[in-house]
Image (spheres, rainbow, N blue to C red):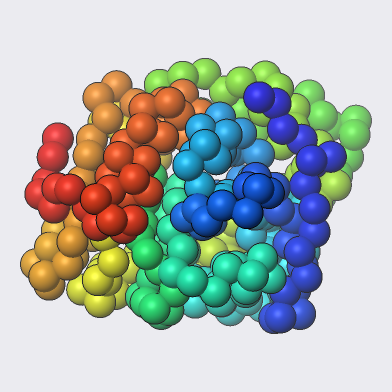
Length: 308
């Protein structure tokens, strides 16, 4: 299945913001689990084009562009508008806009996993379970340490200027491929994804500033601290060859949840990198369906031990 922005629609949120959303909802009146998909940094709902239809067989699905990414406008100019807390608020507001007032499942990839965790910590009554894929962990990985350095925002604005110059597209392609190499390792950066991102950055260079600002305010330290507050079933799915976020960082969150008496399962996928939502989508879907959506009761995990 190939998705595009032509398939998306815009949701108006109670926060005053608007987000692009791709929806796969059952229309025959049957009651199914509700599942919100949250992408990484950068990224957009199109990153889930392989995973989304597989999960849609068992649940109503919404994949959104978080404010400041994809084609969703930012909710404000300040770095605070891109904080975990603010993005968590936007995610819940998106669920409200869909009429999803019952507890929902959150599937978050990379930074989206951090946002999903923040939602569960701040709005526990709204979350039935979490699937955290290649999620942020503690300590902060190398990319976030670099993005949080002084001057990173000014550098992002300068790079955004370059991406807005069509005559520099060949140079920009080299720069972007280099940046994306760890994200897609051990696979190569797909040519069509590279061109799509070049077009997106050219039309919305402010995304580069969003990339920097979500790394500010010590989000990884906040996630480690809030892990002890999680009480919903939590499923970690991480690639053993993830070159962007080491599995040990995500495992630290998992272990903090268990130490506090929470329910968490950590599954390591051998040979998988950071973009397992693309290259291991079938296996991911099976694990999410088995571990969360189709458990003995929705949201009750079958295993609460560390695996892999």
